[in-house]
Image (cartoon, rainbow, N blue to C red; front, top):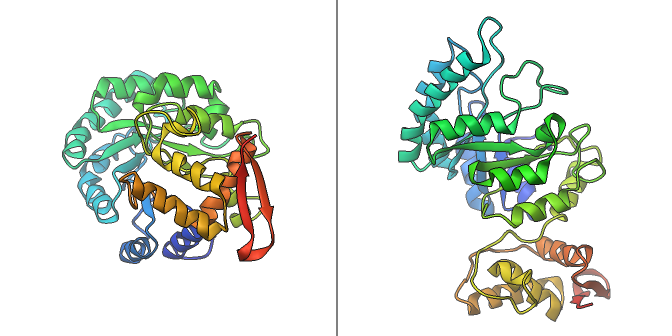
Length: 337
């Protein structure tokens, strides 16, 4: 949904330049997978998830078997690109049969797909979509319905893709549902409501939502699936500014209190930002701190991400962000309140 008109491998490079650590795409059938793999190797970006192919036919009598049969190819593509998440959509309502009849077909297919996915180290993530604004007639629309299916399949290889945009439209109660169903959630998508645009300016408080996700055991990615209205780079930078570095779990308290003690990466980023320096110096200091804790290279941050973390500390009220000077030689520092 970003940078229309350019090849996927070039989008990977653009995302890396903005400071992102991962990307995802929908179907793989129309893409140059070798070029994408080369771009990943060049930039260090990881593939968070992609749609399996064929997709969207679980409810369909004729196409359901094709989805099951297509799983091995999807697994091979996922392995080639280093992801363990394959996205599934169900397809639409079947007019001449009951919801329960269709549900039995979906469950049977997922049970058949679960074992080979589990053996391959893959997780299939089933996505409910909204039927009020975008996907009229789609069969699976709400989290509790998806949870019932996942619970009946009863496999660690089958979970839910919770698209926060779709679920806000269908039922709301976002943070409570995240906390309630987190053990069944294998991936997240995000977009602003209404309109499916940027994460800032709509009816959802994504800063609070991300904080709620961070308080759970979830350690996967959160995908951005929206149509920018302020330009691709501006929208992606804005979204990145809503979060600090993703968590690397650690034991014990952090030197700057419980919040910083939640993960190695944030503790190191906090400490480097409080010590201050040019952005390059803060980045180098961050790397030194992680190395001194026996975590060298475990979560690399770009200069852009360091600057984003300084702004995030200020926006969360943890520090005042001070900049002295201009350009690459400017001194940046987070000052404790």
